[in-house]
Image 1 (cartoon, rainbow, N blue to C red):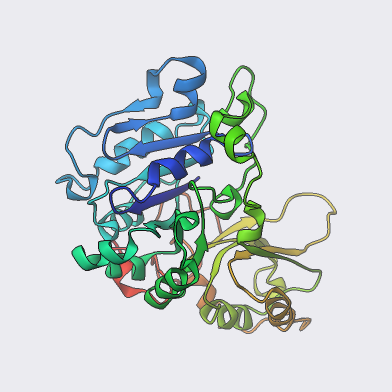
Image 2: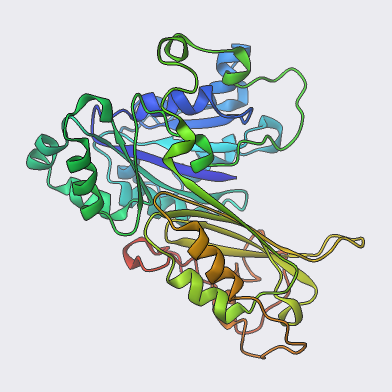
Length: 369
């Protein structure tokens, strides 16, 4: 289950963006930890009017200043229990929070049901210059982000200048403009519930809101904010070539998801891949039983990416050699949970470093590694 950290200075539009996600979740149920007010599973409360096990409470002010580093784990444990039926969790940080500390807490989580879903930083285009002047730490926050939403873009006449300035301050992150927090949720998580639920609805099952009526449910063409690429190969991929591709992936490439066939390098398993910004992890799992073809299937999502070029680079990762290089998987295994960690269901890889790495961003490395 992805856990997305939603940060940004006071008044930037974080809550507006969260509300938009709730109303356009594609049927997925969103659990929200709202740092300023406590943590609630918003869909269940709004639809059923009952809190029950879906309610947790912060009660200690800013989450990033929590003395007990296991506190976030307790909140996540409540929200990720299978009986609650949540598909994604969004942590809306306080407007004065340190996003770096929130990400560290999440990466250090011992909950095997969650995976890091990225740091989304929201900025107010209309107030960006003044905010930077008063709070220069904003530049540091932007440098840590995986996705930056330049909100209230409709309120400025020099939107291109603001976008250019923000892009100059980020480190390979995707940067997208938005109005009223309208960002396509597919940028952040898969809008597909894990299974049919009887008697449980999400916000967008209830119809359009007044805001939707005022601005148009599809106003702004949300899909225009990003590009995507689907890649399928019936030949295995060479692990070393794929790691070179991942290590050099371009600015603006926000998400990579899917399955990889490494052929003779591990014939028993396919590798689920999950990348958000600079975070990367592989999950080995046995191939499904049956005679279905063994395929590599990947989806890449980003802003301003050159999809055809990326497709050609992935094609160059194909390999049809019948034998494996005994050291070929070392680069991949750096990003696999160690066999001693919860949730490891792959082969017992000897020599694999049990790391929680984040590509090219040492400041966000897991403090537990």
